[in-house]
Amino acid sequence: MKIPFSLPVIDQDVIDEMNDTLINTGWLTSGPKVIALEKEIQKLTDTDTVICVNSWTSGAMLTLRWFGVGAGDEVIIPSYTYSATALAVLNMGATPVMVDVKDDFTIDPENIKKAITEKTKAIFPVDMAGWPCDYDSIMELVSSDEVKAKFNVQGKQQEKLNRILVMADAAHSIGAHSYGKPVGRLADITVFSLHSVKNITTGEGGAICLNLPESFDHTEEYTYLKALSLNGQNKSAFEKNQPGAWKYDIIDQGLKVNLPDICASVGLAQIKKYKSELLPERKSIFQYYDRFFKEKNWALLPPSINESKESSYHLYLLRISGISETQRDEMIHYISTNGVGVNVHYIPMPMLTLFKNLGYQIADYPNTYKLYANEISLPVYNNLSEVELKMVCAMVEEAYNKVVAK
Ligand SMILES: *Cc1c(COP(=O)(O)O)cnc(C)c1O
Image 1 (cartoon, rainbow, N blue to C red):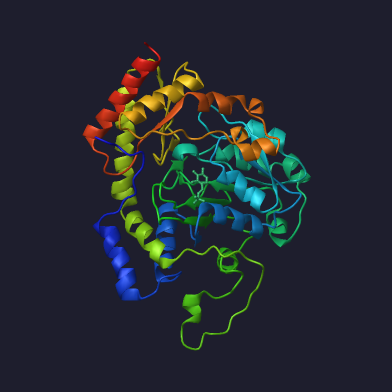
Image 2 (tube, rainbow, N blue to C red):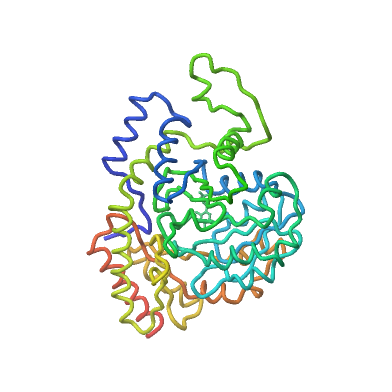
């Protein structure tokens, strides 16, 4: 038996929705299916404005362009995340300022506070594994007089917000909630990833969800961000294709990051049953692992639910108490050669060549290294059977016995 680490949901509903797009609508790029997917994400997040794009990375870049962030500006991010969080910032010419995380893998608001300077324009908290960050503390911090006094206003969006922008990296956390609010309503802007390995996927894709203060008109920002996602063009090809609607304008310098309908179809079929079926299935996988590993005194369980927060059950970040990075690597080697796909989320950015060359050093992020060194991510996806879950658990235990307790 071979168990892959990750598998997307491709079922009859997905095939039917895709067939409908190909056969009935005759339209491949951004059109009615994207609009329908945006509406579904609005419902799920209890928000009124969602703009689909072709990846999380491009959604984050578009948000920075929209907020007027570029050379000379700083964006605070956690040191423990996938590199895209930093690359979106670097690609817009700004500087990612990394800060260390807490034991629940999320950015530490105390460290954010210390990292804020007059150049700080935005903060990208990352909901690691689907576990929402401490948004209440972060929003309180950026709204405090002391921090607002440092903010250097440049351009019309910064003028309207008049403080640091909080943009959630919710690549993992669609469907999670915190203190009664769904992810999407916890930060000013939330960007989801719809990449193949995420809870809902369009193959490649992303979605920007607005939750801005009243100084912004969401309808206006929707229209503007849509244009920005289409090279700054104020009409999509679909809109231009309507009789007599050929005239358009390029209103600003945008990016070309729109999501095609052909991709949106896949996510549309999935999201319709996400809350009722797909998410509860992921939760039951977490519960299976929790039941098994809580009996092992060498296992450290990841956070997934408490009185105030519930995860989207994206990644099961198991940690093995007291082992070294080498022992962890040996355990992974044992588990993988025995047919179970496991992974590590993530190699901390300061350990990767690009970031080392830019001067980041892992020694500055001790908690990130501590969490990484003994972490093993277990498979979590829809249709993972009980027999397979049992085998994953057995393999991890066997690996522990062979490598550590030998
Ligand atoms: C997947 C991921 C991204 C990037 O998403 P893309 O849609 O591939 O651009 C960003 N941040 C985190 C934490 C991710 O896991």
